[in-house]
Amino acid sequence: QIVKMIVKRGALIVVEGVDRSGKSTQCKKLVETLKEKGLNVKGFNFPDRTTAIGKVIDEYLKESTSLSDEVIHLLFTANRWEKMHEIKKSLTEGTTWIIDRYTYSGIVFSSIKKNMSLEWCKMPESGLPKPDLTFLLMVDDEALSQRPGFGNERYEKSEIQKKVKEMFSDMCTKEDTWKLVDANKPIKDVHDSMLQDILKVIEGVKNRDLQYF
Ligand code: T5A
Ligand code: NA
Image 1 (cartoon, rainbow, N blue to C red):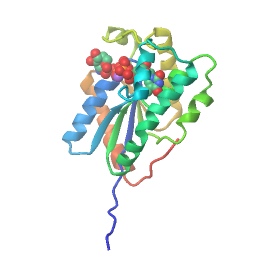
Image 2 (image 1 turned 180 degrees about the vertical axis):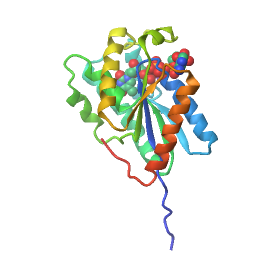
Image 3 (image 1 turned 90 degrees about the vertical axis):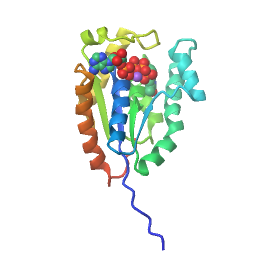
Image 4 (image 1 turned 60 degrees about the vertical axis):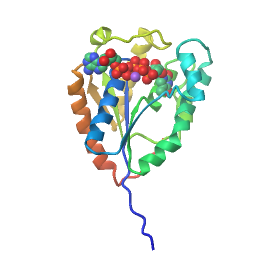
């Protein structure tokens, strides 16, 4: 008789923050370091602009297409759902995922718009796996203005970024699986502190079931 081996699941780690707070930089480094340590890990970034839905999102962000607030919200969510079966399977098989933006970006960027309620924005996210740990990368406005890469995509405007920052901060104080990160520090210092937290979480969730929104 074949005895099914009990595979310990991987952790779902999410990195959120305002534009240019260093999310992609940190995600990339974290995946590299965890791989060097011999752990099973994958990195991913939402929105995934490579899919059919992602291409529409890309056009919307570049302002070459306009869509209603409801429609773009549902497309961002659909862009997560189209990847979700793969991520869920892989997590249960023991791979840790480090994800650059997730549901929270979806909810925040949509619900700060006029006539878009928080409740409505949360609805289509229901059923997606809940992160075991969400980092919020925070950078002072002064330091942020020194960083390159503030482009001309739809949401890269200071009044939008200000609202985003406030709402993320609020979420961070309310949720106990969130961790505030001082991302003003040098890249390596930020990396080291995030790494320690992730290693603890990977160990802690091994025998715990995945949770869902
Ligand atoms: N969106 C997204 C929604 O509306 N709904 C959704 O559901 C989702 C998922 C695109 C937009 O889509 C919106 C939110 C966004 O507006 P994106 O493609 O993830 O989302 O955004 P990007 O433009 O790719 O990423 P960001 O601009 O947010 O930048 P990052 O990833 O935070 O920053 P990063 O790592 O690229 O670094 C920026 C610069 O700072 C330097 C880096 O070298 C780089 O030059 N830097 C540092 N400098 C000094 N000290 C440090 N510690 C530094 N860390 C990085
Ligand atoms: Na990014």
